[in-house]
Amino acid sequence: MKLAVSTGLAAAALCGAASAKDLECDVNSDYDLSLTSKSVILTRPAEKTGTPRAIVMRDGRMFVDDAWVKLTPEDSKRIAEYEKTVRAAMPLAQQIGRDAADIAFTALGEVAAGLSAHPDTTQAHLDKARKELDARLAHAITPNRFSGNDLGKGIAHAISEVLPVVIGDIVGGAVSAAFSGDTARLERMNNLDKEIERRVQPRADQLEVRAESLCRQMESLDTLDNGLVYRLPDGRRLDLIDATVRPRQITTR
Image (cartoon, rainbow, N blue to C red):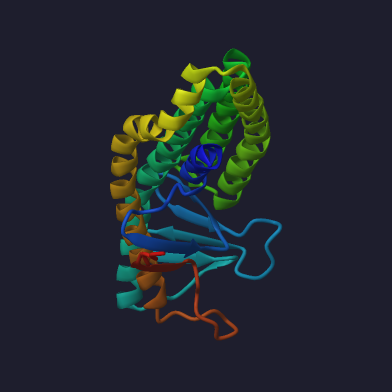
């Protein structure tokens, strides 16, 4: 069904902000990240249990919860490289989040313009949702801060707010077109997916390139923390991030 395809495309663009074209990238971390001019700071959100609660990296040194810890020369190099990689990744993550939002709302705008019974009203809802998402993105992802928790909540909120309105209005417009014999609107419905693809595909291709680069940087961070000789006082290794990057599985029917 055209409605399902078109609205699904928009939702997928917004939810799959870090999805690369040929890769599947699964990244998990118990920490939020922030930067200062001197330090990389990882803090465990209040809703997450476990320790350490806070880690500071500075010029190859590392502070864990309440003290600077002793590192081997090799670990110091790993921590310094970790800092460098994080600082390179932050602007990229920020751009990906904003690009994904742009693509999603462009697609939803095309859907609203092509199928909505009340396009102006629907577009007003989209504009409001976009402003709210931009505000949440500005808090979740900045050049100096990344919160996956805040990012996820922001995207979920945007989708839950806008999709019911858009879908409801589109269904009304589709039913009205069918009963009234509005052939022009029905034709737009038939061509809508192609029009959305035409408008968003070039930007989606650029987003995929950035996403692949970010995936590889996350993989590098995982490799660095996996390589640390340092162990926590209870003998556990320091697990800051888990990143699995693998070729995307293409299924055929």
